[in-house]
Length: 442
Image 1 (tube, rainbow, N blue to C red):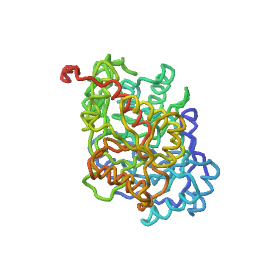
Image 2 (cartoon, rainbow, N blue to C red):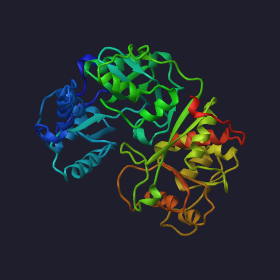
Image 3 (cartoon, rainbow, N blue to C red):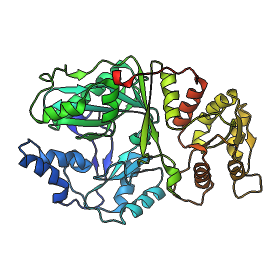
Image 4 (cartoon, one colour):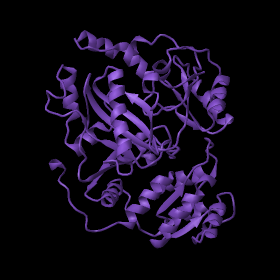
C-alpha cells in the first residue's frame, strides 16, 4: 500500500492510502480522446497530466498493484475507520461510500466489482471537517481566484448536495491564505491553462485537499454570478494564449463581496420512487437556487424559500437520529421548541431529549402498535422530519421507510445535522420584510 501524499504538496494533501483493487490497464482512447482533439486543434494539452489528475492512483504514485478485496481491508485497518472507498474516473461521487466497519468495506467491494474495473479502486482516510471549494483560472504562471466557497454540511456530503456560502464566513485569514497558496501551487504543478476546481477540508488551521479537477465545475456559474468575474470567458482567453494580467485582472484571491450569496441544492426525490434520500458522498441533487442579502441569516432564509422550504405550517416535527447525533439533536430540538414546535421522537431519541430538558412526545416505531411515526406522517400534520440514517443499505429499516414516506407525502426531510442547524437558524431569523437584490448589478 502507498500513502496518498505527493511530496510537492505534502502539507496539504489529505493523508490516505491507495488500494489498487484491480491491476491498472492503459487508459482507453475514449478517456483520452478530448486531449487528443485539443492537441490536433493546436492547443498545448499535457495528456499525461490529465491522466494523472483523473486517476488518483497515478496522481500519487504511478505504481500498479495486484488487487484483492483483502487489500482494501488492510488499507482500512492501517488508516483506521471511517474510510472512503471510491472508484477512479467518476463524476458526481458515483459509487463512493463512507465505511465504518469491515462489513461495509466488503459490501462496497461486492457492489463495485459487479462491473469490471479497468482502473484502481481507492481507499482514503475520511476526515470530518469544514469543506471549502475554489474555482480558479490559471494561465500557467499566475492564477485568479474569484472567491472561496464554504459548505455548511461537513465533509461526507457531496459538494453538489451541500449548502454553499460565499464569501466563506467561518474560516480565518490564515486558512484562506493557505487555500489560495495551495490552489496556485497545484495549478502550476499540474500545468493547468484554463479552469481548475479544488475541494479542500479545513480542520482548525490545517488545510487538506479532497480532490483536484482540471476543468469547469457546477459552481462556476454560481461564483461568476456572485463575484461579477466572468471566469469562463477568462479561461477561454487563457487557453488561447492570453495571460491574466493582459486580461486586466490582478492575480490571486480577489476581494470579498459585501453581501452573502448562498447556493441551496434542490432535489427531486419524490419523482424517483424507492430512492434513498439520505445525503452522502454520491451526488443526488438535480438543481439549485440562490439566496442573496447583506446579512447572512437573511440570505440563508431566502435560499430555503427558493428551494421550496416554506415553514412553519403546523409546527409539528419528528426527530429520530442515530446515537452519534443525539448531542446535536438536543441543541437543535431545544431551538425548535423555542420556536413553538411540538416535537415527536422515537424511543431512544425521545429519552435523550427529555433527559436534557427538551420536551419530546414518544412515538412508536413502524413495527409497533399505533400510533406510530408512520401514522403521524400520513396524518399530514407534520412540517419536518429530521432523520439521520445508520450505516447500511437495508431498505426494510424503519429509517428508510420514514424518509421515503415523508418525501412522498410532501414533508420536508433532513438527513444531516448541519442542514437541520441551518434551517432552524433561518427560521429564528425569518422576516417578512426581505430586501430585494438586483442580481444584474452584482
